[in-house]
Amino acid sequence: MIHSLTVILVILLLEISQISTLERSFLIKTIFISLVGTALEEVVFEICDCRVIESSTFSNSNIKSIIFNEYVEEIQENTFTGIANLKRVTFNNHGNNSDIIFKTNCMSNLDTLEEIVLPEGINLIIEDDSLISQTLFKMNIPENCNVDYRNLIKNCPKLRYSLPPHILILLYKNTLPHPILGFKLALVMMYSHK
Image 1 (spheres, rainbow, N blue to C red):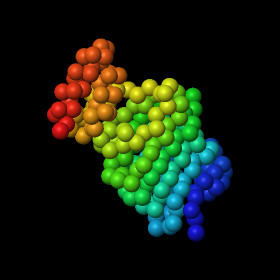
Image 2 (cartoon, helix red, strand yellow; image 1 turned 60 degrees about the horizontal axis):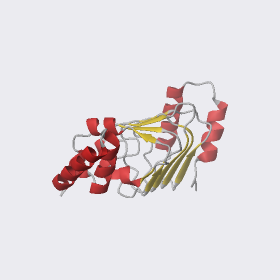
Image 3 (cartoon, rainbow, N blue to C red; image 1 turned 135 degrees about the vertical axis):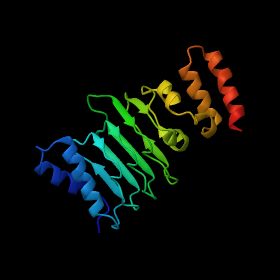
C-alpha cells in the first residue's frame, strides 16, 4: 500500500529530466489520476522542476498532506478541489523567483484544511475570494513575507461579507496609507460583516 509518493516522483522525473515544465505538469497529473482510490496520504514534490500545478491535479480524496520541497510559481484553478481530507499544504522552497500566485478556486470546499505553510521571503499574490474566505486565516505567513493586499481587495469584491473582523482589520491596516483611516474603514466593514 502506498502512503507517500515522494520516491515515485523522484525516480520518474529524474529519468526524464529533459522534458518541458508543461509536460512535467501533465505527467504529474497523470500519475495522480492513476492513483485514485489508493491509500495515498502524503505527497512530497522533490526534484520535479514543476513550477505550475495544474487544475485538478490531486484527485485522490485520501491525501492529507502535500509538501512542495521545490519552487512553485502558480497554483491553478481547482488544483486542490476534491481532496476531501486535506489537512496541510507546505511550501518549503521559493527558488529564485519569490512570487507564489494562487489562482481562482484553487482551494474551494476544503473544510478539513488546518494549515498552509509558506516559505520566508515570498510575495503572496492571491486572485481568489474563495481562498480568502476559507483559508487566509489558516496561512502560516512568516514575518518577512509580502502579501499583495491591494490586489486582494481589488479582486475580491465579496471580501467584506466573508472575512472575520480581525482579518479585515489586518487587510485594511496594511492596504491604506494612513493607519487611522484604515482602522475606521475596517470598523465599517466589521459592522457590515455581522
